[in-house]
Each structure stands twice: as C-alpha cells, then as structure tokens.
Length: 299
Image (cartoon, rainbow, N blue to C red; front, top):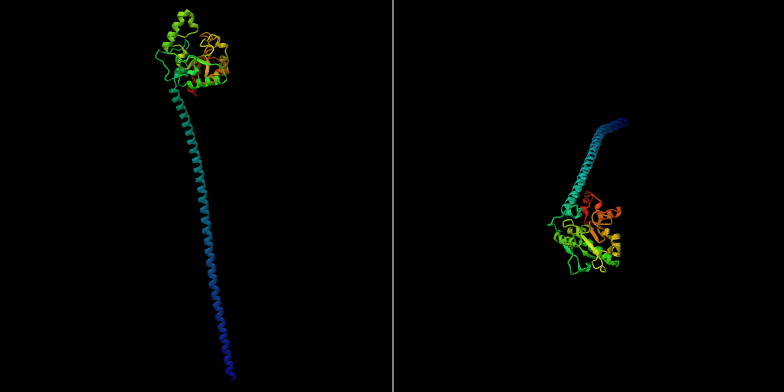
C-alpha cells in the first residue's frame, strides 16, 4: 500500500516536472519569437529612418532647387517688368511727342510770325474760322468786327474782367483782310503821304490780317485813339492783358511803327507771361524763340 502511494507520488512529481519543463519551453519559445519580432521591428525602423532621412534630404534638395528657380523667376519677372516699364515710358514719350506734333500740325503756323515788314501774308490768307465780336464789346455796333474763333474766348474774358472793374474798354478794330488793309493804307497815304508808313502797315504785313489782333478804344473816345495812352483802359491793359495772352505790339521806341498803345496782339498766355516777366517786346525775340510757344498758344 505504501509502495503504491510512493509510486503514485513519484509519477505525479515526474508529471509535474515535465509540465514545468513544458511551460518553460513554451515561455522560451515565446520569448524567442518576441526577440525575433523585436529584431525585425528594429531592422524595419532602421530602414524606415534611413528611407525617411533619404526622403527628407531629397525633399530638402527639391525645396532648395525650387527656391532657386523661384528666385530666378522673380529676377526674370523683375527684369521683364523693368523692360515693360521702359517700353511704356517710351510709348508715353512717343505718344506725347506724337500728340504735340499733331497739335502743332493743326495749329496755324502764321499766328506767331513776325510781320511788320518782316514776314508777308499773301492776299489769299484768311483765318480758318472767325467769330463776330458781340455788339456790347465794340464801339461801333453797326460795323461788324470779327476775331479768330480760337482767340475769341480769351478776348471776351479780357473785356468782361475789365468791364467788371468799371474800366471803359471797347474794340475799335479787329480782323482786317488783305483788301481792307490795302484800302486803309491807301487812304492814309492820301492823307499823310509817306508819313503813313510810320503808323500803318502795308497790306500783307498787318497783324490784323491774322485775326488775332485788336485795336482798343473806350466809349468816351469813340474810336479816337490819339489819347488812349492816358485812359484807365490803357493802364488796365498794361497791368493785365498778358494774363489773357495779349501783348502790346508796338511800345515806345520800337523799331517798326510809332507807339500804338491801342494795338494788342494775341500770342497765348505762356509767351505773353514770358514777355511780361522779362520786360521784353514780342519783336525783341528771334522767330525761333517765338515758335517754341506755338504749340501752347491756345492752352
């Protein structure tokens, strides 16, 4: 009985030992599996890190390349923008030049010529367009007076502003044709002989034929210009006419005719201002100096 129990205990111990050895074997196997997986994972991780580093470097290189391309593109764009800006400036300059040339081509070149025994206007010359001076501005309403249409707004403004200061100012004469000037000079020659040359231009040399010149008077003088110099109207013109583009053609001691305080010619505000500021006479300038103002005569 004791031998059987002892044998049973021995078998149990043996089984228990075998079971323990089996468990240890299983645990060892599992540990081996885990170790292999860890090694595999570490290898994968190392590979992944290497691939990441390689990819990161490649991306960095690509970014650097793109930045260089972008910089080069920006520089190219800036260079082309500079070229475009230069071309635009050239186009604008050309447009301005073309505009000036077109304006000059459409402006009557005779308007600033130095007549008075220097340049000659043919008998066929007449202003392209003339406007009748309103009766309220002339001393003899029954006699029609005309002026070049482009000049009329400047003359009207001058007369309105003068009259607004209670200055008695009227137009005695304006545009005169070649034929009219011829008749007038002939009449003066009959009355004054060769002395007429001191105060009256021959036909073709009169500024009046341009249609830009007027003789002023006052209501009180009734066209008699002999004492016009002593009137408030002449004083006002001396101080203000240049503001409207008008200049005194024949001041005292000029080389062409006697002093004519009533005779005023439109030359444009810019040239009139220059003459006023420099205290010069129209006929003191060279024709080339005068011609520079032709393009702005009606500005």
